[in-house]
Length: 398
Image 1: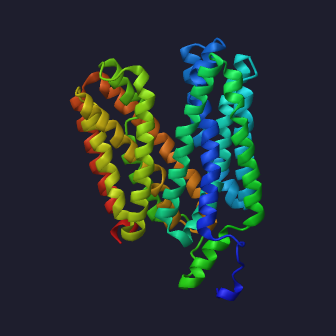
Image 2: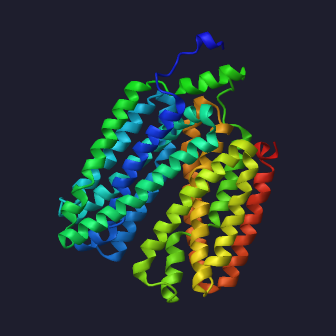
Image 3: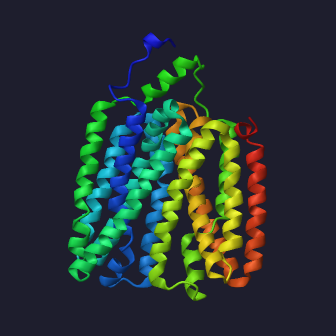
């Protein structure tokens, strides 16, 4: 392919595309993280039991990850990346404000799940388009900047909703209605971006043409599956924040009111870690990911102590590990998989992460009730296995 035969994607450079798409994600996280922060109390106010809340929110997370096994191949087959991304975002930003006005439990439950379905519809298409632009910017840095902006929305959204609840005396209607404003901005910005960059894949074609790289075939390479096994292992030993906060509260280390503040601090660390490891990934490659099993093991060693400062430090390390999971792990998928199958790969990868996250939550939660030393030993052992799997991944060896 020659430079003359490559169609330019638009008048917008790849870094501007990454930043604008990061702004979309920031605003979308403002919307749905704001809603998720009060989903449990909202359902309870409509008469839901703890079981109903658990089942509904669990079903939503299962849909957000599991349905990507369908939406990923669909995006690759139809090549309608913009259409799927816009449809998924639209479903989310419409569902959230309606949560505050339906007033009926079954309808609210359906909307909670619908919001997560929207994430499943858009995510493989969104990640694939982002991967095309990051071929020119550096994949690690591009995904890291996107993740950092994403976390800004995840931090601001719940704080705005909390402020609205305080102002309205706990009225969920206006507290969720205010989230319609960033929702409208999400859709407007997406339509503008589609008009400016109708073909994001052209960024990657230009980058490949500039380096005279041969076009790869359309198969999912063996290295992808080895990498997926590494991801499953390191995620299966990763405690959820729910387990960490449970330990902090039941051991009377931190008051329950301070748990959201600690979570916000962990999200700030998440953003910093994403930016740092993304830059290192572009310079040193997949070896940077060896930090993830080390951090995951450190979370178990630190967070489940009975010393306040050490346990809090463990929660902040958890945030650093999350930053790598949400950015650099995704960046490497794009480096391993050819463009024609990348949305499928992202869908499969999300399925692996979802299943491993469920296993990790069950493993750490179950072992916590039996023996904390046993929990730490098992988690460290699983992370050693993850390091071995990363070491045998061809990209990591290079």
